[in-house]
Length: 286
Image (tube, rainbow, N blue to C red; front, side, top):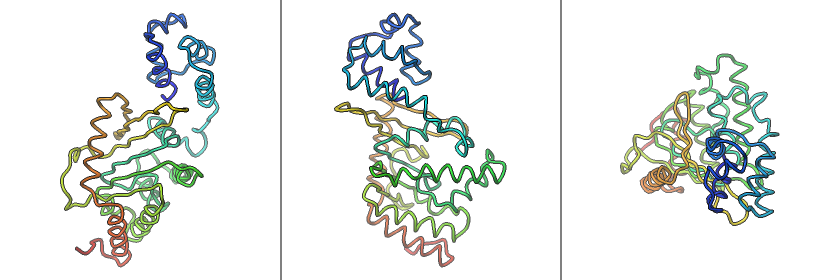
């Protein structure tokens, strides 16, 4: 997907049409469209032909060639990760490569922030994970993925959580207390910003949209990078990168941020609710 978007930008910058690119590769125009949409790969030879046809400079061409080679050697979806559904894997990879991640969540704590006990409780009721071995593999895979927050240069992660995420009891009060304490600790990190959208907060556009994630992928040199909106269904996912669709999600994101508590107030509220769970009461004081 990243490579396809970069190739589309180069083609448009060069003033070429998909039909022009098809003639350069001696292929049908539909193949160019599939490559640019990330629906099919491209051979290294064809990639080099297109880069020359589009007049890409040496540095940019080298970056895209390396990106193409990386696609073929990643091998990320073996072992523990093989338990993840195929439609989810693209998101896992994109999130790993993102420079900026913005999350809206309505019902559960996002995967990046889940404790082992919390994620295990969720996985154990997942119909796609039928054995304890599957659950163990899914837990290890998610924990490995969470390590992106501990990298030397981690992404910036911003998140608006509906209060439902911290009131929906997953695994019992002790699990919830530990999960909320973990959220408070994460929220103190310089590149993590959490905002709680309380039940008594102002309504905002997109209240019925559930969850979505905005991912910004960096690009080489002065290129602007690109952004996806990721929307998940029970058995599939959508990746939106057209400007009109992105404007809608960017607008919803801004409205939800404005309606939510600020980061400092969020940390205080989460700490109170965590203590409440630890004491055995699911209700935080007014």
